[in-house]
Image 1 (cartoon, helix red, strand yellow):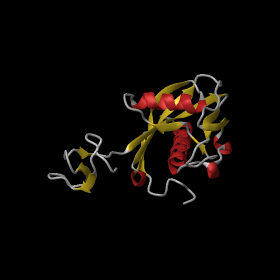
Image 2: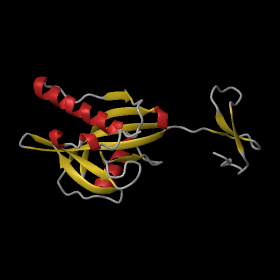
Image 3: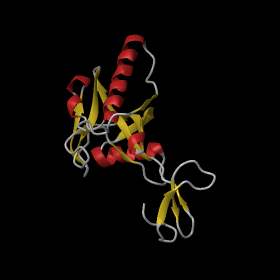
Image 4: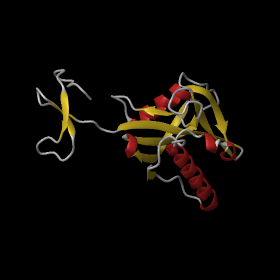
Length: 191
């Protein structure tokens, strides 16, 4: 940040009086500009028939990680709830009509100032198509998922947790859990 959004004068990075963290402070009007983590919201859209469960994944048409597979997800917009953001992103990236379930995972990605949240979701039908930010959209069983070509550690972790819960449920019953995790490795798996 270089300029104040209140008065357009330069800002400097300093610790304001009564605070304990560096903030951008306007050199003229003294407005303090707080920078907070960005929220990334998405879904785990599934389709199950005859005991076979498939997950809908999108192949990214944008950087970072162009050409890699991901769950439908993106940045939350102002004036929407987390659930609304997850549904919107699923429609935008996969053209999929879903019934949104409960929140499944919350991934803290502090090194890039993001929090990723994924909701369970059931596809209402198999009418889906790539949106502008997707090259392709496909259904995968657990064995078919391109694990080595997943875009981000948050996607891999969320899918691993999802399938672990599913295996536990099939073995002993119960339901899906809610999972939190701190992602400390680089967001790009090739870094």
